[in-house]
Image (cartoon, rainbow, N blue to C red; front, side, top):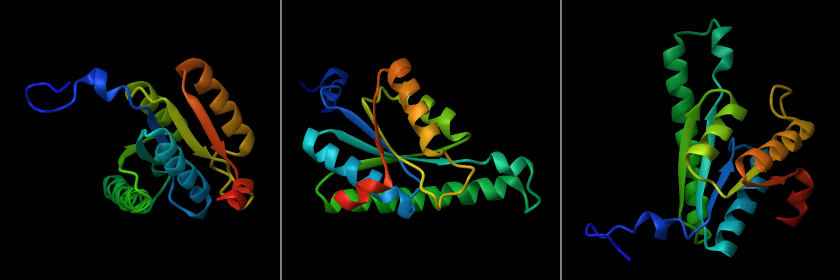
Amino acid sequence: MENEGGAESSSERRERQQIVCAARGGKGSRPAVNRAIRLAKERDADLTFLFIADTEFLSHALVGPPSVIREQLRDMGEFIMATLQAKAAEAGVMADYAVCEGEVGEQIREYVQENDVDVLVMGQATEEDDASRFDSGTVSNFAAVLEHGEEVEVVTVGQDDVLME
């Protein structure tokens, strides 16, 4: 049922699952991105890629005006997410993206809450990943807390899944 403006009503929009893929865009994100695209296609769901510009380091950095660096990080996130959006389109999936700023776990939790997300797809850290990022134990714990507290299905994708992609 459409409203007068031709847009779908909120109840119609909610019939489709909301899948969010938290991604940094690097090589380690590929398995999670591929899984998210595949899930969206299989479930005929809406897909959003989520980039978090973690700017916590700026309080300790002496590299220039924090506002300029924040803007550059957001621009980089926009570019990466637009690239993932194009990858999804090539696979026949229309995707959206969001770029947020702040502490990664907090921002993911907030995004899930505010956007009524059904499925969150996250990658597992690899040995090559920076120590400041979630390690596999942290991702597992974070996923368990989200699934319980936010009632969202969390799909974690590890490097072992690369072989299946």
